[in-house]
Amino acid sequence: MKNTSRSTLTAAIASAVLALGLAACSEAPESDDAGQAAAPVAEAPAPAPVATPPASVVDATIAGEHRSAEHSARDQFRHPAETLAFFGFAPAQTVVEITPGGGWYAEILAPALREQGRYIGVVIDPAKADEQAREYYTKSNQKLRDKFAANPELYGQATLVEVDPAAPVIGAAGSADLVLTFRNVHNWMEGGQAEGMFKAFFDVLKPGGVLGVVEHRAAEGAAADPKSGYVPEATVIELATAAGFELAEKSEINANPADTKDHPNGVWTLPPSRNTPEGEDPAKYEAIGESDRMTLKFVKPGAADAAPATDAAAADASATEATPAADAGDEG
Image 1: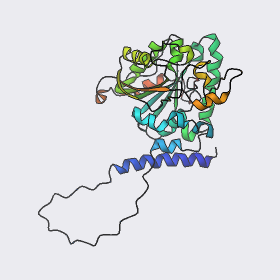
Image 2 (image 1 turned 90 degrees about the horizontal axis):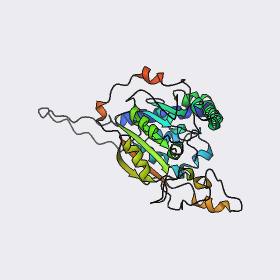
Image 3 (image 1 turned 30 degrees about the vertical axis):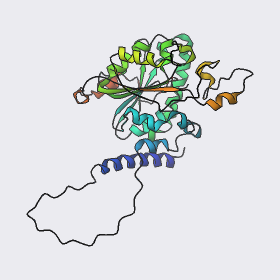
Image 4 (image 1 turned 135 degrees about the horizontal axis):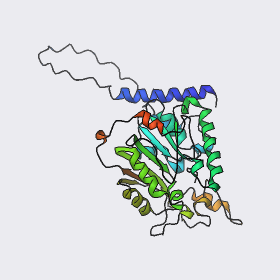
């Protein structure tokens, strides 16, 4: 993308932040001085044209030219504006995204947080992965680093934390406002790492902080089968509450009733993976669209205003470098 396009989006985000702040201060206080003589009534001016409300920071970023047509086409299945609003996203927060994969959500989160907040991407340390996955994580991590480095106007403030999935430590305790994970729980369950990951989310969040989970949803009553990519909603709730979270709310923002969840290659039969069995018509699965997904909001108990002060230096000490990051978790 040209520098002018990058500058345009950066300016649009900054303008949206400013407009949202000014809107809160737009009303003048009423006078309480009853002893003053009333001023002459001037002729009322003609009403001003109704201005279009400023786009939110998230809306401006979603509409940005830095997003490819391919990524934007998935908005109809992922509903990013509605999903982030449901989780309580705000541009001044410290937001942790777990295994951002190819960067689909990072393209929205990191630019939206650049001016006022902080984006932290948590990736798997290849040295801590098993031999079979080591090369995969090395390549996928570097791919997103390169993507971010090529556009510092949008991603230059993003940071990286590499973790050992068997013993994850994301950052300083109580340092994050919001932790987000999109379609990753099945991977951790298959690797026997889910309990440790949810505990790490709990530790890094401030009291009152939010964990937002989007995951492929298994059919009601189905047994947990992470190899299919689908996970029972009750299993995710159990993992989160066992780590100390409280379930605050559920949403059907990312539901897809057309998904029968009985596909020969699991969730990867559907778009965007499109792993269609030989001899079958891909149109059948294209018509379904992307998977049915649960959207769950959890809260760490405790008053938000009682959160400990964040030690930025301690949080940075957990990052292996100050360059943008990637992981391949957010792909399915």
